[in-house]
Length: 577
Image 1 (cartoon, rainbow, N blue to C red):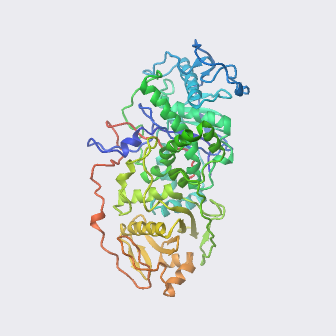
Image 2 (cartoon, rainbow, N blue to C red):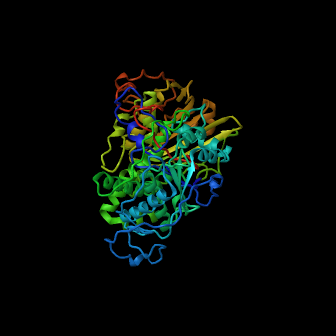
Image 3 (cartoon, one colour):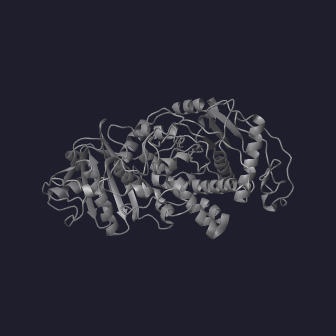
C-alpha cells in the first residue's frame, strides 16, 4: 500500500449524485467539500513515507485561550499522560465544547478565529469520543494550487501502474484505452478539503484562498478525529495499511467509520441547537473544471464512508467506545465483514502459475503478484456496468436504499453477496500485451452461479460472441478474449487480448476446452448466463425486459453540478487504487 496522508473530502454531493434528479442540471461528481456539513472522506497512506508537503507555506495556528465556562467535571485521572491533563474531557486549551466563540467565516478566518475554531472543535471531539487528546494538533492551511502542485510532484511507478491497470480492467471499470492512474487521479485530485498527516502529526486544510481561508466544520472535526485516533493507535503502523484493495477498504471501514460516525453526532448537535456551530459560506461552483471522474472508482472508494459509520454505530451500541478501540486494534479483514457485520474469515485460495509462451506475472506487486478486490469492488463493478453499459447485472437504483440509519448507501446485491475470497493476478508479455487471471471463491454454489450469471450479463452488454468455448468482445473498452470456468464454489476468469493469449495465460483451463470438457456443467437457463462448451455459440439477443433506461429519474450522473448543489469530495493522494 502507498499510504502517507489521511485526506479529508466532502461528501455533500454524494447524496446529490445518487439521489432523484430534481432539476434539468445533472448532479455531478467533482471533489470538494462545500457549505453543508456532511460525512467527509479521507484515506490513510504510508505514514513512513516522507511527506510531500514541504513546498507549502501554511498559515498556522498558535496557542492561546479564551474565557472558559466552569460547568464541567474535573480532569480524567486516566489521562495523566496528556498535554492537556490539567483539563477535563471536553475542554482544550481553555475552550469548552459548549463555549460560544466569535467566529465569522463570511470573509474568511483570521489566525485568531482559526485558533478558537480549532480548539473548540478539539474539545467537541473529546466530548463526543469521551477521551482526551494526548497532545496538541497543529492545523495549517494550504491553497488548492499548492495542493495540486504537491500531487504533480509525485513520482509515477510504471510497473505498478501497468499491474494496477489490469486490476481495474478486470473490474470492468477502467477500459483498455484508459490509464488507471489517470482515472484515479481525476477522482481524487479536484478540490480536496483537507487531510491529516500521521507522519507530521498535523491537519492541513485545503482552501481556495490562503489569505482568507474557509473551513467546513465537519471537515475539521473529521481530521481532528483522525488526529485523536493517531495519538491512541498510531495510524502510521502497518496495521492500518491493507496489503490489498479489499483489505485497505476494510481497514478504512473502522478508521473512517468511527470518524464519520462522530461527524454524524456533531451535525445532529448542531442541527438540534445543542451546540452553536460556525456557518460555512456556500460556494457557487464545482471547484474544478477538469475531466469527469470515473464513478465506478468513486463508488469503490466511497464504501467505507457509507458503511463504516453504521458499522461503528453498531459497535458503540453493543460495546461502547471501548468496542471501537478494540476494533481499531484488530481492524476488519474484508469489506464483507463491514457490509454484513460478520467475522467470517476469507476462504484460502491455492493458486499456481501455469502461464507459458513468455507470459509472466508481477511477483513484486500486491501479495505475490495478486490483488484482492473484494465484495465492495465487485458490487461497484456490477453497478457501474448496469448504470453506464445497460448490463442486466443489478438494479443500480437500489444503491440509494440503505437499510441502516447511519449508512449512506446500499452495497448489497445478489451477485456480490456470498463472496468468500478472490485473487486477481495481472500478467504481461513484452511491452504491449496484458491480461489477468481472476480466481473468485463463494460461500455456496448458488452464490458462485449468481456471480457468474451477472458476469455473463455484463459480457453480453458488450456484444460478446462465442468462439470455441471462449467469449470474445471485438470492440470497445473491454475488448479481448475471456474464458470463464466454474468449479463448485470457484469461478475463474481469464482475460487476454486474443484467444491464443488466454490459452497461454492459463493453459490448464484451455486444455479443458480442447479436450471437450465443459468448464461449466449444465445448460444456462437465465439471461446472461454463459454457456462454455466446445461448440461455437452465437450470443443471445439482449433481454430488453432487463434493460436500464438511462433517462429514468433516479441517479443523476454528470460532472456539472452548477446551481444544483456543490461538489463531492473524493479520496485522495497516495492511494494505491
